[in-house]
Structures are given as C-alpha cells and as structure tokens.
Image (cartoon, rainbow, N blue to C red; front, side, top):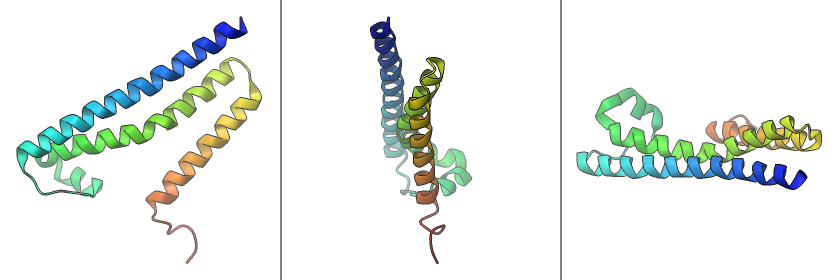
Length: 119
C-alpha cells in the first residue's frame, strides 16, 4: 500500500513539472516568434510591457512563459505540501511549508532589488 501511494505521489508531482515546463516552453516559443515577426525594440521591464499592452503582445507572451517557468517549482512545493497534508505526514508538511516560505521570501526580496535589507 505504501509503495502504491509513493508511486502515485511521484506521478502527480512529475505531471505538475511536465505540464509547467511544457506550457512555459510553448509560451516562450510563441513569444519569440511573435516578437521576431513584429520587429519591436526589446523591452526588459514587465511593467512597461503591461502598460503598452497589445502593441508588445509577443513580449508579453514571452514574459508570461518565463514567469510560468519560475512558478513551476513553487507549484511543485505547493502540491507536495497538499499531498503530504492528505497523507497526514506532518513532518513533510512543515518541511514543505518552510521551503515555500523560503522561495516566496527570496522572490520578494529579489524583486525589491535588496532594498528591504539594509540601508
């Protein structure tokens, strides 16, 4: 019974990774093609892309692909935590929660450019 549970657990998590990486690769590919076809100047700031909207559709799709690629490991940790909750494995629930907190903290601090830490 334990072996079947572990195999199912691994299968679910592998599908989360496979779907996340596949969708992000598809979005990145479409974004590159659209950006190449429109010959627009490169925009590196996601906020300016959102303000300009449909004019930079290729870059928006490209940015969405990269965001999804970055979110895939976070989704894996979230799915792991919920599966451990389902199986009432409290040690791994706490470990998954700690990993999730570390990931979110690093993203927030990285997005602030280190301005939240120190003068």
